[in-house]
Length: 364
Ligand SMILES: [Zn+2]
Image (tube, rainbow, N blue to C red):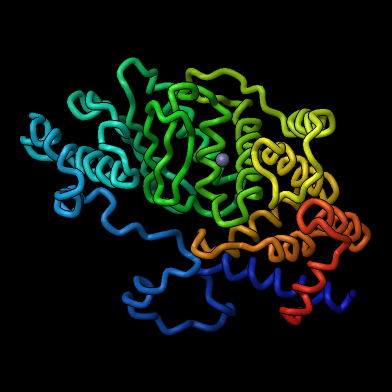
């Protein structure tokens, strides 16, 4: 058991070093041969996603000519389109077309017609830890877009600090509309329903999915809740204008979710078998926050960072077995039994047989 833990710790250290020091030489004295630039371009492992064509209006107009003629015709009627596109306008045109193309409905069910005629968007860049990234908000008439944008911007910067890994996307596009749902799709688009344009927690939850999409559904949702809460809690000390203090505290949040799970009478089901009506979101939050409670906030943050790193900026899916492996690397020997028991009950729905079987299968 202890040898096993040593080996796990060694591989954890390797993983951290690979991601933490990618730009450092392997040893202080070795000067590696510079690799040809093409190698870096083609092999982006350990780097954020490279989104080809983002902001390239010409390419998007050609690509979506047959399927999105409705939106393209509307663009062509506008004076601002005909007099040539600025860089921001080009991003707006390309992102709008790529966004509506991701949904089967006619374009103007996904995007408000006035957003096109009156250019209802805000675009800005943010300097984050490693690079500048873009934020585009496409809104509807009457929205308080300035306030919404200020919050989105502050949360993006805070999320990067919370996760401890470079923000993954070159541009995030948030679109307000009557969707009846809020969601994130992994091409960098967030839909915000009419209910929630100024709902700080929901905006922060959807932005958190920019990091949390590569795990099982319950994990992605639980982590999005937790990182939304942590971000708003941190921003409460210095909220963006015109926002005031956010009512977000991770300990209060844990206590609230726990009391719901304890009293709501949800069926006792493993997380992978739950639907929203079975308390999936609440139970996922409680499961993850109980682990955080057992292993400590710092260890939880480090484990979460390694889980994200293991997904290689969401190029790879992370299985439940892998989640448990990584969490256990950050768990002391004295707490390992409690964490494994929790996984057995809430994830595997057994007494440890499935995790053991997967370990034997993998030879680990
Ligand atoms: Zn979600």
